[in-house]
Amino acid sequence: KAKQQIKNLNKNGDIVDEIYIIGVGDLIENCFGYFDHQPFNISLTKTEQEHIARLMVIEILDGLLKLAPKIIIGGVVGNHGENRSGKNSIVTSRLDNSDTQIFQIVGEIINGRERYKHVKTIVPDEFYLTLEAKGKRLTFYHGHMTGGGGNSESKLINWWKNQAMARLPAGTSDLLITGHYHHLRVITERGRTWIQSPSLDTSKELEARMGLTTSHGVVTFTVSKNGWDNLKIL
Image (cartoon, rainbow, N blue to C red; front, side, top):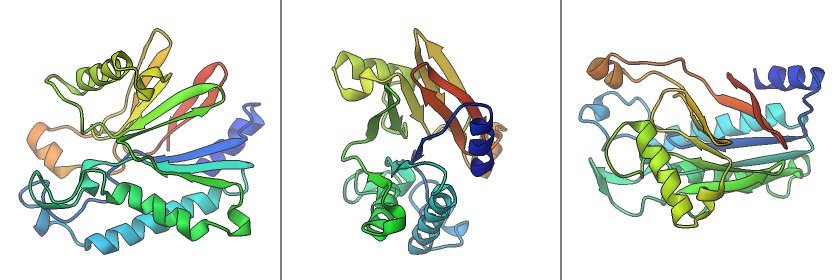
């Protein structure tokens, strides 16, 4: 679907010459420590989940490899990638995380190979990744480290405002792209836009508790000097 989307954009005059493949966390489910019945509902070990996630990243990368002269891959940490001994019990560090480890290993696999010479891997040593594309600054952040009360919108928008107050890199961004909260949301305020990504699959836990679900898929959009455009869920 991404290949076809890029071809359609090129045909319509929106030339794609850079591709960013960024994970916004929770690439694996992990095996326990997040909800009570999780150990009875997970069919793969953590090692098996990480293996499949790496294969999926490489499959996506290989599928798009010839469609742009510059490709960036990377990701940020989510809560399900943490190393836990029980619910809410972190045994190492929240940054010691499968969500970034997966991209680190993929980066090691492709490093030095001729066919991947135009691919760069970026894994931050912070909870968010801020980068520039086409003169615009984008921040990718899972969203589980926000504080305060309220709904997902108020938590993330307040987090973004506080980043600006503290003069941190994320506070200077034109776009904030987050995960964690499952449902697609798009809010633009004074030229800045928050894009909340939907989940890739359904949460039976969320449905049972709240009756909520969403349209699942991968958020894609274009960035140019004029801002973002062509948002599509694939």
